Image 1 (cartoon, rainbow, N blue to C red):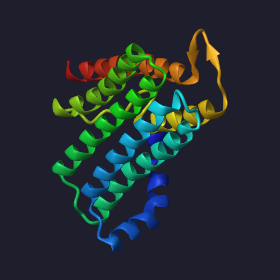
Image 2: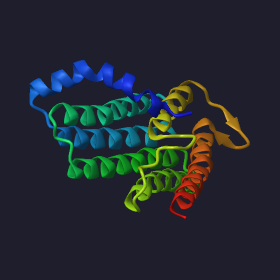
Image 3: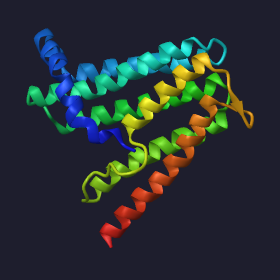
Length: 202
């Protein structure tokens, strides 16, 4: 399951927003920075969601906005012919910090810090292996069960459900099981990407 395959469709839907941001004179890097602040706000909403479930709804909305802005900055850069290594670097740094604060907010909200650590390292290592393959001369790797777009959609969907359903299975809430999923699938995807890159380099 990877929503990254739908990127061409998303880019077409983005066109009106790209037109608007271009007319407003916004820069791709500026949008990337705004996306980070939105992610921080989402993490904060998730932190309060543990005690106030309706905060999960705000977090879900902010996650969708973060994902949309993440697409918009790249589309605007291509429109303005401002694709650059510096912009790519900023985008990746912003995305990783966004991943950290969102997952950390989810874990802190339910006070499952060890599980949060396992989840966030899985997410980060997945992304690291994707770009490290490129660093050693291979193509950037996007393969795996869950890409970033998939994670954001899952986070938003589970957050919406958690706002209305107080469900516990084996002592874990819906958010807790989402963290388990990220931890397990993240590290499995890391190993998958490592194996694929290793075989290509032999």
